[in-house]
Length: 199
Image (cartoon, rainbow, N blue to C red; front, side, top):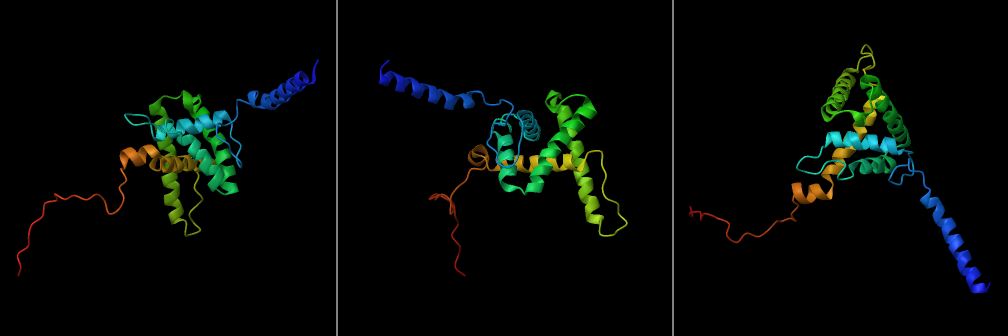
């Protein structure tokens, strides 16, 4: 066997060995590269379904069409404190458990109306907690205890906030819903005006 063939085969083997880990990558991992939080594909799907329930697809694209669930993950991974990131990951599990306990199904198995009612129920608890927190100046007001855990409420709040943030900053929203014009705006040479009489 000549030396060129050996070197060529060796290059193919090394290239194949380098490519093999990428091919056999764990399919259960998130689609977006995260540095600080560890999210599985199931958790990513849950965030996608919650985002889609908040901004559903109608005549306009929904949250999943605009990949807002990936935006939520990236924002939590890059912009939140470590304790908030941990609360987010734990909250996702609490959220999934609450759905399973209440309906005996996963969130993505629920119909759209039931998903919406579930999120509105959490929303009501968040509002009640905020109202109670405003009254908590005195030591007599007890700490808020609701049907859903504090982690579930925090998870939902973070997903909702970043879904709306992602939507209002998306290319679709900025080019189709809010059409941005540079200041001072366009020149209109035919704008109607009236001459004022001198006093």
